[in-house]
Length: 126
Length: 131
Image (cartoon, rainbow over all chains, first blue to last red; front, top):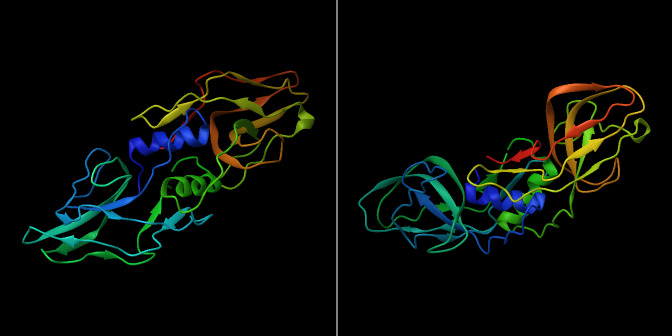
């Protein structure tokens, strides 16, 4: 799950001590209607647009971290669409994107509640 | 992610995702590796050869390039006997064989230093990247 350029700089500055970055204050997840890229989030029509995402301590040496609470939202205002990715942000409804990645196509229609159950969203930076 | 060690992957994941409260590395010290380092281990050159880890200060990272480079030059040696060097290691501690390895990588060209030689890394020549 790639880091955005913004998060790459945060991480490099923190680890290498080239600057004093501020730790992202929170983490929110959004679903995307296309596979997100480093420059485009493609956020989908959800209510709320972003939902809180909480993670457990990372595993090592696996180099991954997973959500420790379920993450869900409600699709609204569209007949149907396909979720193709997710983004993780440091704020909601504004803020800056930290990570992004593709997921298996997930068909959604208004009223649906797509969910990541506990442990289902695994983040790696390898 | 190229060249991060397993230890630093966990540090960064915990820091970005706040799943734990990692301790920020207190500094960076660069070392040399006899063999090709991995994300877990590096076969560090030993002090008997005249080698010491060198303090490394990084500039602020570039964005969107996603890289950070050393701001200070570093000199290893002079070496007291011939030594083949293949990799570079970055640790959070100055003492040889101690601390946590944060980054690892191979030299673009492996070097065999002779007695009396030094290995020099110019300012800006060592780049760490996350892109």
